[in-house]
Length: 117
Length: 109
Image 1 (cartoon, rainbow over the protein chains, first blue to last red):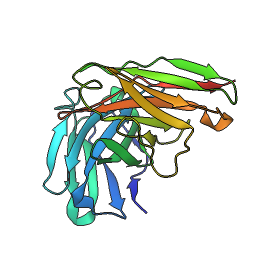
Image 2 (tube, chains in turn brown, purple; image 1 turned 135 degrees about the horizontal axis):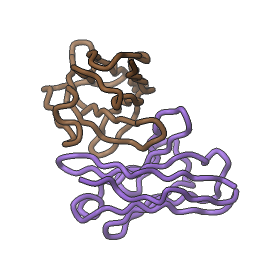
Image 3 (cartoon, rainbow over the protein chains, first blue to last red; image 1 turned 120 degrees about the vertical axis):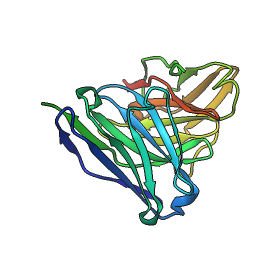
Image 4 (cartoon, each protein chain N blue to C red; image 1 turned 90 degrees about the vertical axis):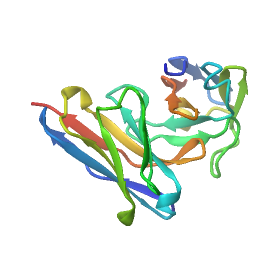
């Protein structure tokens, strides 16, 4: 079964750093792009960026370029999303998802990030 | 790039059919047959319902269908059931990015 399992919920203070993870299983991790999607409370889906674990080629949405860093460790089939200095406005649910040509499937279960002083 | 445009809400009675529209531009929806649709129930991760405009993944009911005309894609759900009540998002893939629609809340009356 193809599966993406994300790391657990996080509670952080403004200014702190954070790295969340997304572990793939059941398929060749290096052969598919992994994307990250933000969903702020009560809002819609926003595409943040995407990485190809095979060669670490990474693309960012202009809205998130410079705000986050996407990386991957193909040796452990895991993709990451990280912040160097969190803001309250980063409070959201974050999903990873595998891209097949043009669509995302499956999705991880989501990681809730709460940033509050 | 702006998000794709969807109606904020639609509703229908059990057994009826509804259609959700998704409007973009010739640079995204109209330029590629790369429109997908996702269903999201409260507190759950999105689930792929339609890919590449009109293709249904294995396991998705044939009550769900997709189409496209020009810069507007559509998702049609026939024979509405209570379990179809959810948020629905369209998405368009381009060579440089992925766009999502703002989402449509489907209420089954």
